[in-house]
Amino acid sequence: MEYPKAVECKGSCIPQTEDMAAKVTEHPCYSKDAHFKFGRIHVPVAPRCNIQCNYCTRKFACPNENRPGVTTKVISPDQAVTTIREAIEKEPRLKILGVAGPGDALDNPATLETFAKAGEAFPFLTRCLSTNGLLLPDMIEDIDRVGITTLTITINAVDPDVGEKIYSHVRYRGKTYRGREAFEILNRNQLEGLRQAAMRGMVVKVNSVLIPGINDHHLVEVARVVKALGAYILNVIPMIPLAKFEHITPPSDDEVNRIRDECAAVIQQFRNCMRCRADAIGIPGEEGCGGEAESSDKVCTPKFLQEKPIARLQAKGETV
Image (cartoon, rainbow, N blue to C red):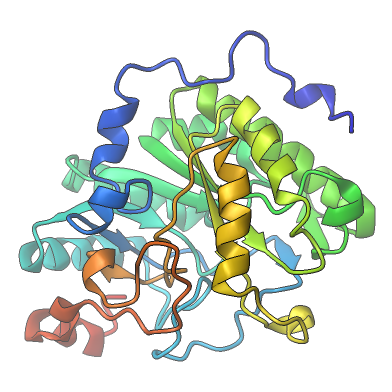
């Protein structure tokens, strides 16, 4: 299909930076080796979301659930700084600071405030942001200014015939859009935001939720498009049957691996994703639910979180 001119590259869309490898060497969500050696801390400062995916529900926050959009508690930027400090004291292998919800990071002013404060307090942490991409073109300068060097965008389709089945609505610039129009606005901004981020030297990972019968036949095309626009790596995530898609049987490990292998011919694949919570802390590979080509339902609980200093902060509502 023909894509909007807004997303066409002038020159190369591949990040023009010599330190791309350095940016991902210690990132456990971008590197298989780092997944088992280094940690990330997600601070849940972003509760509001500007789109509704048909596979997503954020009504429940069970502490035993391991999936995106879940947190025990939403915290403030100041509480986030306190949490980060305490976590680093307990686990010095933490290298990545991320905001991944429980809503959309860019739909919440607290996200940029958190990164600004944490950047001053912890300049050695790589700052990573996860977003649906709706506001990326509008806010690319802001996220660049607060030092975001690794960026994850969830892109589940590039064809409106597929995309309109995945999203219920999109709220953009004060107006709610539905159906095909909603997806077209969302996807145009996702792709343009990806292009701009890559041109600024950010290392971009694209997450694609594999939804059987909806986009399983389409993710190779997603891989082609995002690769051409500068994405570094693709993370195919098996859908969890929730919300309007609760009736859909999730893909088997074999199905997930087949799609990943097909996409691998186009773009590098990340195969260790554990569908982390918005308040995840620790070394993913040590949490008992990651693994090559594995879609596990085990709960990922960092061991050090159960120790007293972090537990005490949790009781006070000052940590994730």
